[in-house]
Image (tube, rainbow, N blue to C red; front, side, top):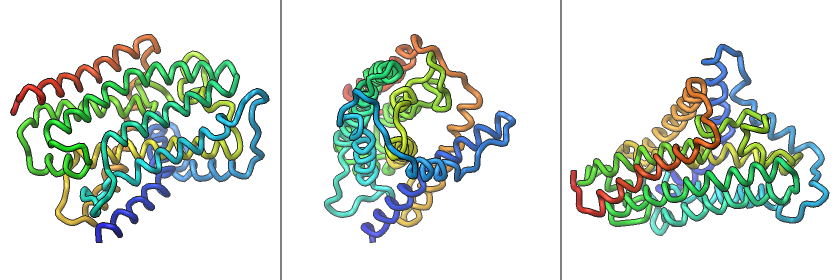
Length: 304
């Protein structure tokens, strides 16, 4: 039964990732007083780009052409590893450290493709992506460290099960959840860290790394962008969210949670402005500081 639930969840979330992105954009437009695009718009954009001719910059190498596929593959593996019903099938690979390294690999290849495009904007985006990554990684590692200290495991299912049992160390766990929420905004390139809708030179970060992409490469990059939103929010809800007794009920709850989170991201982007690039270290330091404080409390035996 768990195998069927898991594979059903993977298929639904993989296919529905562009829809979740559309929910965010639609809510954002509505709150800003605009009609905005349809929630299905990203499907049309991806399909249209798949039909276009694919070209690459003159001085780029195989790295540029492989980067979208590597990004898609890494994020797909992370999605597969997440026990979407809160329960992993017997022998299912769901290690948090593997998730950490796969997310780092995806970020590394996105930046590498920006550099390999040999364009000014690609290098700018790669530099900014790497800078943000240096703040994301210690924060994310500290958060995962808290989960390990509180649950005694690095597999996602035991970590999730520890929360359901209301373990000691709830305060440290709550701090880890706050740190993770800040990390998600930075990892997804959402407000106040980045604005995925802008193409202004002084403000764009992630968009600069894929500016030279077109055709199939752009379609894969756009799908990977939507998949990353799904992966990060699903991971957060599986670890920190509520759980029901039935695996199928948990999967249904997951779909509701992801839809609600997508709408919440649209609200955040309509209510907050992007902070200046040189202020990002402060934001990332806060996220890392909260995570490290939580890790210190859990390591020191703080049992509240």
